[in-house]
Length: 165
Length: 166
Image (cartoon, rainbow over all chains, first blue to last red; front, side):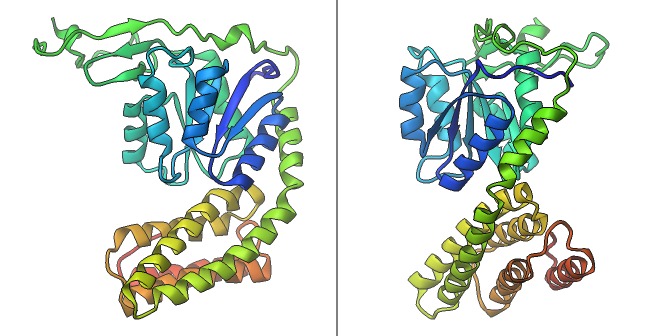
């Protein structure tokens, strides 16, 4: 894996647990991130997202009463926001297949299971840097293209409606 | 066949290309960053140990509530147990206490899988609380060696009895 200078990235941490925010801040600082904002709930996060240039949002899922998923949906729905297309890493201690799918269908960019390590977080950030995905708008979805990469060798059925025209 | 009722997808190029901001530092590896990050996390470890101790006391308090005869107290007890277990499962592994994460995860899954908590279910919940308290009291790091394996084996034996699993 390559070493990237992350000092120019702006990252927003969203977690209702103060100690977890501190932990994430320290991990990010160690990885070289120098511009790091923190929000204790999705409402505060939305104000940051509306007003500040942010490169990556790292949000916990399980917050109350508004969840990380609610935050993702609000960010993606804010058509006038400069950060509507911001990269979002969703953190959760409950990384079931179903939750991964739910988060993906809400418009997240990356999914990261807790407990977090410096390696696992860095790997997600590098994925965002090295493989930026176009966005897709359909009747019921707005978010990063859920097809990660074009597989030139793929010979199976194409399932998108426009593929079948 | 294409679904003619659905509009075709619209593709938007991502304007946030982070490669313009994050440059590769040639000749260096990310391991040096991992060491820096881990050193910073290490400094929070004592705080985590103190939080774990306090949360163990709160788990005991919520368990007492969950065992109450008053419905509202029982519900509040289960809610509190879930909240703390959820937080601990997300933190333990980061600070070198993976058993805390494993037991916390098992507890959350058990609480989520059940709607009613009578004596039999509360016995399982108590086994989880006792296991986390044991890890905290004995300061069991990593897999805990023989003690850790025995602790997890006992919890698994109890869960196996009711068909649940870690």
